[in-house]
Image (cartoon, rainbow, N blue to C red; front, side):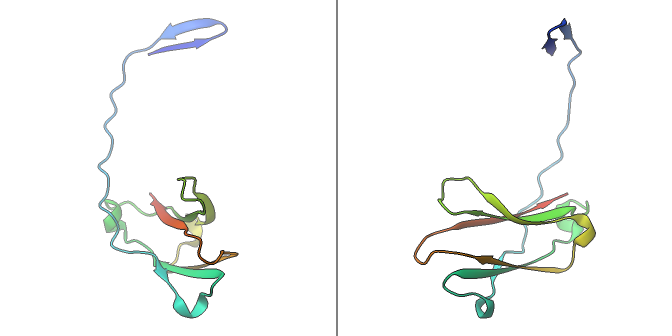
Length: 110
């Protein structure tokens, strides 16, 4: 590898990095909470993932993201950090437009 800056450049040895295996897809899915949802809001609920599903590593955070244009540009709605992790999460998405399609995803980080 060669790094450059205004003072010049330098070469370094090649580093070998072994990446961890990707965990399997989580069994838990995001669920719609019908009794809390309406035509302009959506209540989402999901369970925390056990550490076994993350190759034995603890989950550090979760996030829920929305893509209102279905163009792949997701915007974070909410994130949960490790000091507030619980067994079940509930989040209400408001301001939705009737007959518009939305993409939603959630992620767990370990």
